[in-house]
Length: 197
Image (tube, rainbow, N blue to C red; front, side, top):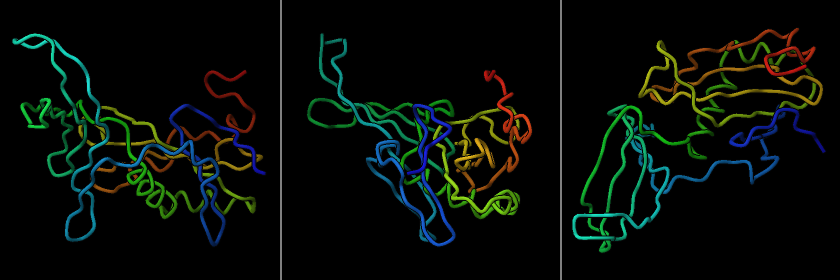
């Protein structure tokens, strides 16, 4: 059994070989989308990430409201919809800062983009061991991944190499914007990255 060397709460782990992919720990995968839509080319249009009900204070007193959070790829913005107790939509908020975590379906897209990137493939060729993919938490900067672009970290490792490859994938336009992100192989190999002793 492979041991996963890199583990964070919201990471997903998938092992890959030359011929197939398999989920190592299904519990590590993010939730499936509550609702997801695609355009005629199969590209993501809109994803609803989360839905919850809460008791909130309204002008009429305490009432139950249901909320949906998601991301619209055409607008490059996240949304929160509010529904009343009869499931009628009574409000919505849009912002580049409202996007929520990636869903299982989005992460699979990120993994495909990552493993097909030429820079990443060069890293894969450095080992004959089984490669393990990790990912699933958002990234934002003031350049390629500014607010609204839905960027996500993706890593590859093996049983002997903690970080074989590390990229940032921009889901809003299906691009690996930083194929060699924070890659100092000697530092990773020797465990001298930030926070490691």
